[in-house]
Length: 131
Image (tube, rainbow, N blue to C red; front, side, top):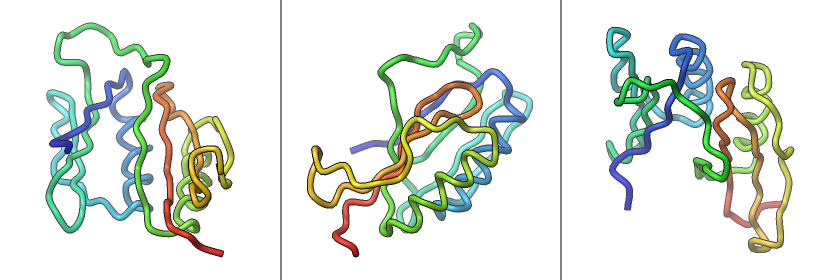
């Protein structure tokens, strides 16, 4: 469904450090980093898309985090949700909902919510039935 997702940032180096750590936990590989523009992108596995991109807004205006916008990363195990959440907070993210089941979505929906250092809301979610 998606070719890529782009998240705007103000402080590229801080955001790059945050997302490099998060993408490592999620198993996504850095595809490119261009500090001159600035922007960077990570690719999914096993397919090269969708890409997850960060960078300065193309229009040259300052980035402002959107209220009601969120990017959710799907993972295969609940332990990865837990690890991503811990790492996000260690790297300057802010909790917006600790890991746990959210049966209001479906019985096996296990997710954590947090904001990156720029205020962008993120989710890491596992849909698998696990004990």
